[in-house]
Image (cartoon, rainbow, N blue to C red; front, top):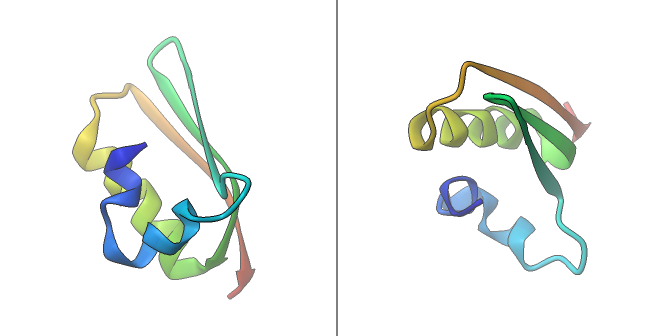
Length: 67
């Protein structure tokens, strides 16, 4: 989780009452679920996971409110 929210653009999402991004790990597969504000945040979240973890597969199911 820290890997994603260490990105300056995504820090505001951490202060929300409910998490904007859910990270689900199953058998070496990391799945991102939730809603972010835009496509840039969607890409940054996936990038943070790729830099900070070793996963066999990453599935980015984040939805961008504004494209």
